[in-house]
Image (cartoon, rainbow, N blue to C red; front, side, top):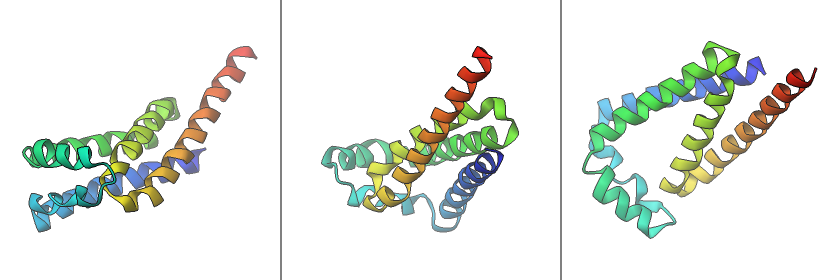
Length: 129
């Protein structure tokens, strides 16, 4: 489980770094077209009216969320359940943005869901012992 914690922690920290670099190098405008390939028309409308309007705030909050999630994975096992829940929410929440995210975010969410299930089973086993 320590390997999984470290891997997911690194994934989220690298995601935060990628967002920082993308916004710094290409500007926040590079995010405007992210939802153009979404499979939900209402998601594109929401992206264009809400997210694009407050793009810098959205990027800052996304980076903060990714850093927090990554650190929760890495810091200590007692934060594992919180980190897994945050990771699942992030992966599933960002999946509708791009069709390609189905191939990365859904498997990551499923793996984290399995690890969360194992964490809860481990907690139950410890309590019953």
